[in-house]
Image 1 (cartoon, rainbow, N blue to C red):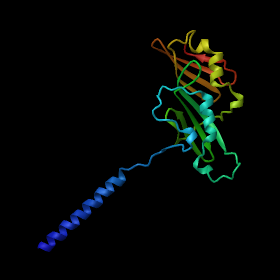
Image 2 (image 1 turned 90 degrees about the horizontal axis):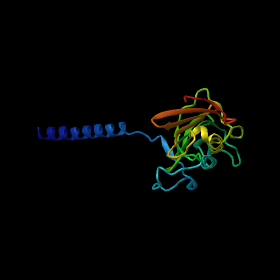
Image 3 (image 1 turned 120 degrees about the vertical axis):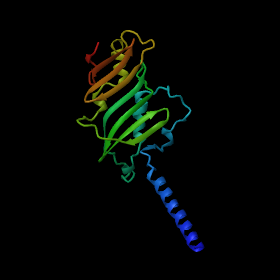
Length: 200
């Protein structure tokens, strides 16, 4: 009986250990976000989240990115990349933002690339349905758009006003501007910068 009790206790400990390990493994999830490893892209984590970055700075950082499937490409090969969507948050009158985001299709993959005070991060993403490739040579850049349409965007004043969201997709800029408790939505032609419509 004593031996039986010892064996029973031993089996109990083993089974309990397996169950605990199984629960631990089941609850573990793989991270979907990876930080770009290029030292040139990594900034100090103690920078303020209110730090502003120009679109040119964020866009230039894309040239230093290497997606995992591009590592094996022969030297000098141009990666097959297409920008489908661009967004900015916390944008001031100079069109500098707290963060810039790019949805990029590359080969058979799609990634969300975010440029902000944490550096540059890459995350797996879903393709943007019905999107058109954004070709920078054919559109007005955010800084030029803000300069050209400053009086429309900021309603005649830049004091204390900030564009909370900017998006570029399907040939149009969409801006969200809160003013005096009201949310203004402005849509501009991405090629000419002309105002298409607003909710004013």
